[in-house]
Amino acid sequence: MRAFPRLLLACALPLALAACGADDAPKPAAKAPVAAKPVPPPKPEGVAIVEQHLAAYNAHDIEGAAALLHDQVLYFDATYADAFRGRTAAVDNLISPYIRAIPDLEWTLRSEPIASGDGIAYEWTLTGTNTGTLMGIPAKNQKINLKGMSFVRIKDGKIIYKADYYDAATLNKQLGWQ
Image: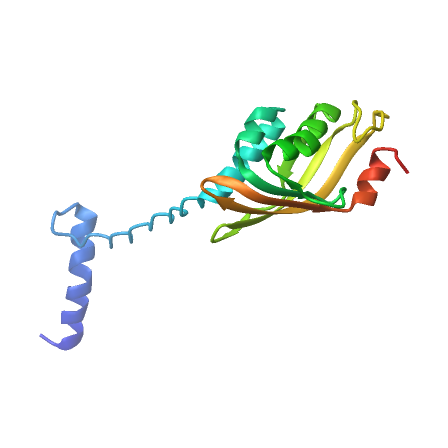
């Protein structure tokens, strides 16, 4: 037999067998297995603590937000000249007044927090309506929509340092103080 007819026979025979439903017909190539999506790594402990802290604020749970602060926390807020030292000072001067003055207060993360070692940085938006006295100033029922960022350090599973940075003049304007 010549080369061309052998080649024709080699190609045509499997096709003919496949058309007849023969068992020894060539099988289609198997599909490559689909790779599983990578599982994201677990969140660092500090990020989970920050998320719990913001969730407590959003639930208007003063005790819950306070419970995530270390006894010796140093808490800085851009509106005040100095930071507050200790959980009681932070609750009395920051957490409780804001939750009471803005009862529908809500913190929303604007992006995924960045964590390194014991430090976490995150951007946020604070929204709500000021219906109660804040810093001794009566409410003017103003809506708040404030963007800012915070830096947090964790020690012994609690927030030992928190600094909230935002444009205080914008907050004052939104509160109707200017």
